[in-house]
Length: 257
Image 1 (tube, helix red, strand yellow):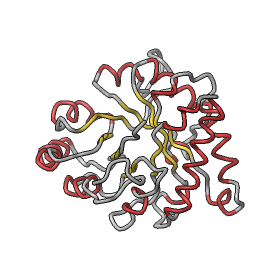
Image 2 (tube, rainbow, N blue to C red; image 1 turned 30 degrees about the vertical axis):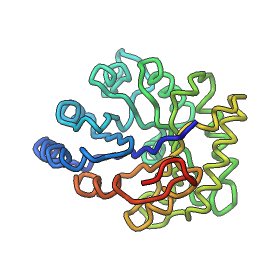
Image 3 (tube, helix red, strand yellow; image 1 turned 45 degrees about the vertical axis):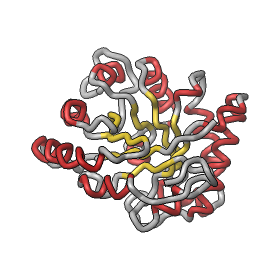
Image 4 (tube, rainbow, N blue to C red; image 1 turned 90 degrees about the vertical axis):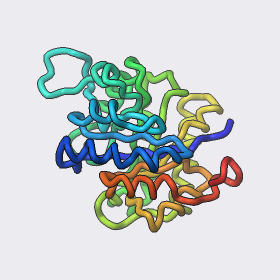
């Protein structure tokens, strides 16, 4: 099975206005025509319809989060079924910035199930904090996160994972490619262990912590890493074009660029 390369672009809350969002998608149209890999752009909730209507055909629509609940009396929540109705195909869950606001692995598990039931592919983020990293607990933490998040989940072929060390978000610090590759390999083995399915080792696993234009190639050339999640500077169309257009030799022959 040939693994594909995926770029998840998250605007977070950085897009300042609807006018800027429209300008962004207009400017993205030309470079996007040459995108050779799978590109998923995740705007804020309020810009999803604009993205759906204006995104280039080579770009897929994602969301940055969703509710753990189905439709009902949950003020301020955005449910998976509403996202699906807007044309969303992917959704990030478990991002470290959402965990900092209270998301637990049990809540993320509920979100994953809501997304799968609505036909949306979850992009599931796991990773350790600085104290856990310094105490060599990364593997223990990630295995526990994955087991709790995947409890009761059966749709193994509809998942994407992302390794995101919490201590690398907005700090200017990041892991080496070598270390990242070891952790992602561990995640693949853990997926096989939890599922009991050898094929679960081919679930896409991305890296998403402190990625810049100066270090992105190091991660893309890791044999175990299937792509990148990036937020830094991605509200600029030319930055996205540079990220996706990075020249790299991937996974020892699984598709060179």
